[in-house]
Image 1 (spheres, rainbow, N blue to C red):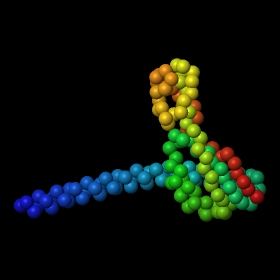
Image 2: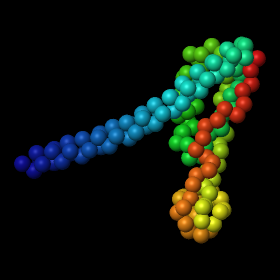
Image 3: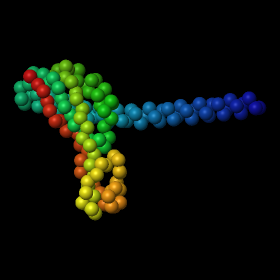
Image 4: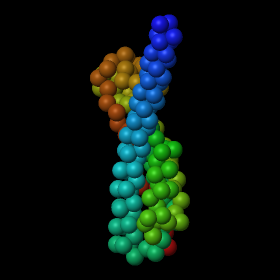
Length: 146
């Protein structure tokens, strides 16, 4: 009987670990889907720009990514490398990511501060009447093409 309890405990413990691993995988997979969607939109935008401007190839794309945009740069780069080969104008392009720092504005004391360091509460007056003014965007800064 003791052996059965140990086996059942082991089974539950193993199942629990598998469920936890599956949950972690699922979260990462959802995040990858977010990055892929943005990359697909970016590739379509670049294809359209290349067509409008009669560009043969895009060699470099500089993309500014907000610090609190939710974009994971390593996953984004992986998605870019995967999708660029499917777009002839982008196939040899380089992606350069620049970070836009997150900045929050306080309505109470009219100051700005680093969002990531201090969060929603203003470090100057401790008000929570604050608004993100920068750092959530994703912007094409530069395109090098021929």
